[in-house]
Length: 109
Image (tube, rainbow, N blue to C red):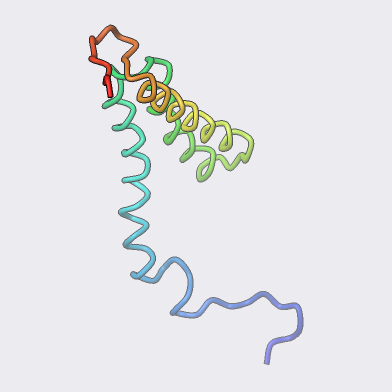
């Protein structure tokens, strides 16, 4: 029996060493980071450049400030970059126009 207040011990069936949790994380984390970068690249000519750059930089910054150099304020700022990029993309969709001069027909319905 363990004394009161002692730290819990890890068992073989708990924690991130289980294949049922570590394999999905090995897929999710690179996909999460690369997905943000690729989304910014894909939207480069559709949304304002600053918004595409914000999307490209946001997830690598999130990785740095959430994992390697834990800093909640900077991590929150990285997520704000993601939000700004998505807000700019939404504004472009709602306005049905592109800031780089692509002619688009407005729907007349």
